[in-house]
Length: 505
Image 1 (cartoon, one colour):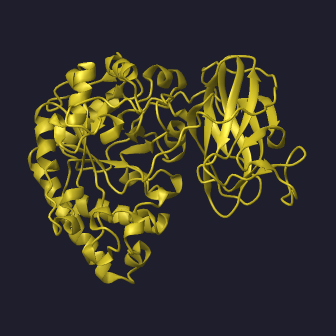
Image 2 (cartoon, one colour):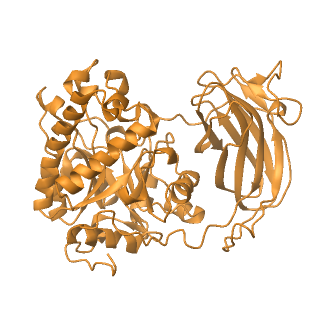
Image 3 (cartoon, one colour):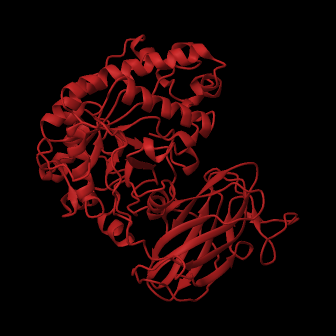
């Protein structure tokens, strides 16, 4: 889970906008890139819109390369935002391009459509450049598009809206074999099942650190009558620096139990840094700001002891994974997650150091320990952090869009599906706060192979009674999602111990 949650763009003060007219594109027929030419629906100048908080037209306009009469600045505080009002003539899918410039390095900011979060846009350049969200569905009529501060500190020139390209015909045709050529039969059976359903159905998943009988699972069962197909667990308590402070893990036995009851297991690892590097509270030492670990020095050989300490931690987790291997339990294994955010120590030294650690972890677990039961889920969240197709089986994205946001987050899905890998790989929503509406995801082509909601307040109230928290997903939406014919729950799973292995795997 990320440190902190993303705020919604709901409740922003009313602002002026601009009206432009054009034709949408709701035709999803497949065409090649050379055949498709996007149609510009309108260009909306930021200085002609209106802002809240500190957002205002720039006074000096010292930065060159803008369109119109200028640009806006002032994205500095939590409620700083700019709203465009646009008119669309035809139902369809559209791309939003916020032409902007960064003030001091890479910046991410929120975008909302009619009050609902639809994603974030990123800009690195100090000069005006494109910053896009793709395939956003809008019906004919008036819409409000809000650009709101997350990191802030950008100059915003304009919003350009164009028609979206049709989806590639092979988007869901994943032919990639498992990265481990010696994968176990159990891993191949599970992978075959995942491939057979990708692009058509969604696997339901839920993190619950007390296993399938924990409160999150019980709340979902009580609310919907269904059980998530995937149990999310964490190896955090097996990390040596936590064990030294009295932690005891039970995730391994929870995983065995759920697999024996017909379920699928995914693991992350909030890797608590070795004790030598802990500067804050010991139980928060997976966060960058609670450690002084320098991964760059470790992987470069300047800190040889650090390499040895990390290997000792890997040994401890490998011991648990070996138990699961012997029990015949295949794992959707998601280590070193959310690296590009920088809030975890394994991402604080940049992409090159991270990739070296990821590949080292892959090599040790796969080749030294012979862990053939792992399906490797990479969750670095940025293409520059991608370690290579030979180390990745599934691509994961973690998204926390705010409260009661049921949109498909199609831009994040398509970015991961089309840009990270040199071949088609399955794309999963490996952590989420809200559930997405399956009907919207199918409409948008955002066929996340799985979601796996984070635990605690995202599902259950923090009380002794197993009560649904509707802070993030309302009861009616949870019921709709779990009862949806294209959602796979535990009750829908086949016998994965005998599932037919795909030819060629």
